[in-house]
Image (cartoon, rainbow, N blue to C red; front, side, top):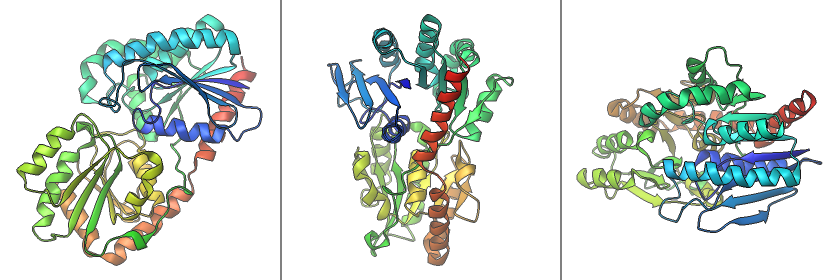
Length: 385
């Protein structure tokens, strides 16, 4: 079985969807008889073609990226990837004769898959990741108006459309209530991410957002302002922010304004393979996001045995049970963030109990299960062709 995989994000480019692709490919490499070719974006001005593990090959195409803009994809980036990626994938199809196309994101990858499907008579599957679903991001409100008819056609003609969470599925149904949708959750590597309380400092209470993209959508500003409230009573609070993005400069300005230089640290981008110690040293994971598909960072925090404070968005309710392994907070509510965080900060027994429940929940999820679920979809698509 040969699969053509389309995703313009792949580490170190992008965020959660790129990491999810990397984990999936790692699991695909273990499946006998499965061959996968990923067409993605290059981080520089060159084409790259290299074999990964097993029968997995990665082809990266230059779209104008460089080290300064790895975490934000502009409309220009997506258009270049759509054009160059389609041309490259078309030539690759003539050579490899793929059985199924798997596209991450409705656009541009789903659109590319639809064109390739019509041209070469290959079934395609679309994985919804978040911003590709109308209504997910206020930033794209105007764009959704123009893209919605195209997105509906991409979904309608796909063999399967798969959401990463029930929340994302419900949002997609607002665009087309008749669309058939499956749900396959993101996974987590419980071998890569696990608790180690010996790494937690005794003189600091560390709050982490996990490995994230620093954009306004993540609601980080509200957490910073909550930290400002906490430090007046709890000077040991330390917020560590892994990652980079186009909102970092503005947030650094807020930290200076609030004089939180000793309480908030911007760590910059840290490779996926090096993030584990930062989860292990943390006492609490907080995600004040305004919208999510299914947060990889939250999954990694669960696996690391952390209690969770999060807004009710995306797949949060599927990962966090109120009062069992975490608390839900209102969006953009600084007081609620501070109050729920302080509650866990002040009650070590509660924090330990929540952390143990988080780890148990993570152990029920795995990238192996995710890969197996998609593999079964590929088999079905081939059989019904």
